[in-house]
Image (tube, rainbow, N blue to C red):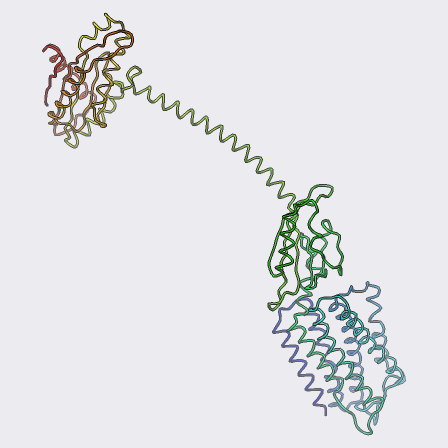
Length: 551
């Protein structure tokens, strides 16, 4: 019947491979895989005892099996500490816990005077156990009984239902193992049948226990939850962390939380504890109501703790989800004091920079307006507001070259106020200025947007008419002439209005040389001289008339 233990060994090996392949391996999983590996030793040793005929080898496997059983008993107890989330014993007590199992293992290995086990019929397939066995066996069973007691305390405590579910699953495994071990002792040691051994009872107990344990690992994620909340992990995080189960019981706190709240593991958590009393009522009620009514939602709030110095803290609440079920909550506390200080300093610096920028913008606008005025002053006549001779000369240099290049006709009017010297002599220069400005005002009303009016000097004005033929220019000149003659100028300093006339010289250019002249300024001088001569023709002809020439 050696095959029973061998089959159990193979099944345990298959479970080991299954756990290794189906879960993400953490430190706790590694510990369990080591524990599971030792669980495989008992059925293997039982199988080896039955297939070998050498008594010394059989004795070696008997001792190895009982040493392995002692390790399993101690391992079960330490695992129970982790599973039930009780505090682990101190280092001194942790050393004392495996001591009875260690002494029993030493006694089994030494087997003085066959006080632990002695062979039957020259071999150890059938064997008689001595007093050392009867001392060691209850000690090992005691480890299982202590584990059962710790699980019982967890089941009757206020721990979360999910933890109780996991504990119940492991409880079944421990109870099955203890039942099968006790049955093995009763059937094969206390009340053995003559010439017959019932094989595989303890091996089957170990197998069933391993099955329950694998279910707890794979289905209930028992080791995964422990790894999430494990103290060694969360203590490395700078933010304060508070881990709650689904019954709002505190199951983990890291060191970074201590400056904010005075809490202990196992306490019942109250969400209102973490909101300072000085915070606004609306802010507190909104956060607390959302926390209680929407447990699956992530929520956050900024609060101010008044310690020795004000401390701004960002609180974030997030659910722990396992297979679609909420297993608890994680609340993180991030100290934002330094960030807030930097933000405030940055905001202040930005405000200062904005003020300086606004001042610079104002200065820039003033400079822009000043530059505009200076540019206007540079190109306009101070008395009349029309362009000055310098501006007109610059414009005509470009325009004449362009007109000659593209064969575009244009015209120039040079006009002069008749008998202007008499106005100055009779009424003074102030009235003369009023006459000049009034004349310019009337001319501007007639000109087109593209025409350029400039003061040529004294009472003389020149008008550039782009893209204008001689007939069009003559028609515009007559309109100007008639408008000035028919409209008297009202001068505030004298009672009567002054009627004036003007003389106009018209130069129209329709034909251009095949090549542009090398010096555009010389061309302009020739044009000015030509139109000036035409103006004097109009004056010699009796004034208040137009004289024209076409080139």
